[in-house]
Length: 147
Length: 138
Image 1 (cartoon, rainbow over the protein chains, first blue to last red):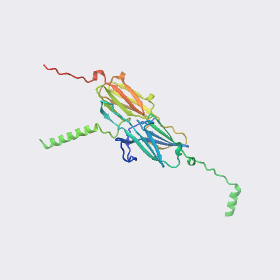
Image 2: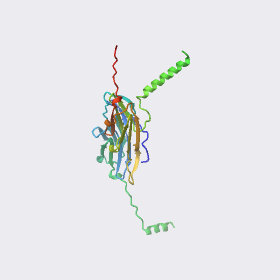
Image 3: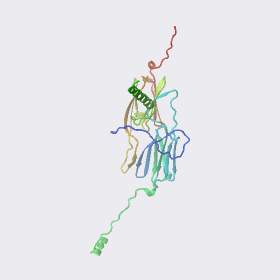
Image 4: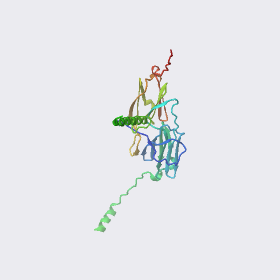
């Protein structure tokens, strides 16, 4: 583990895609990793304060929306003396390509980390196209016809 | 009043406003992990967002009025043929020391880790608790 977690800052989501909201809080854009594997695409998102009950994943056409609701209460009768991060909901929107098998998407949340496993559709899996070697005779014929 | 005095007064006022604002504004860069601290007469509450870490591997130490957090998170291990399309999440190790406004009763510190958020409750040392002093009239 050579690399150090350096300075990081929560980013506010630039354009909340849900239109106007009735909940008065900020929306942050969670940091994500997207990994492509042979059989699946994995999306991992850091959403501290969110659990399986407060997360909404919707797939409409090919737009995948992740929304995490954070219910936060500041400690009672305390006054803030240091405030380095803000608290609010999370939202991030992805456009999926056709290669994902929509019915088999799996989502799990653990310790504030969302993990979405999206299996690739049969057609999108990398296929090896076999190349047949042609007989020597054919090659010779070709050469002869050009000669 | 001299003209230059007035300029300095104005500058001083501006600096005061700037500092007052800075207390509640989220700074543009902070040492990881970002922490929030609340204080009452009895204790301090420190919260920080460190999702995905193993709470067993998290080290919290308190000496007088300083709190040190130490932890790490491993990057996802990739097998052959796997690639990152996007890589924004942090990984590696971190150490952060915070200076609290008072000394802490280190034996009574409580820490909770839930949904990726760490909350530490640090009781104020008995000697550091604010005391009400009554004024006697003669």
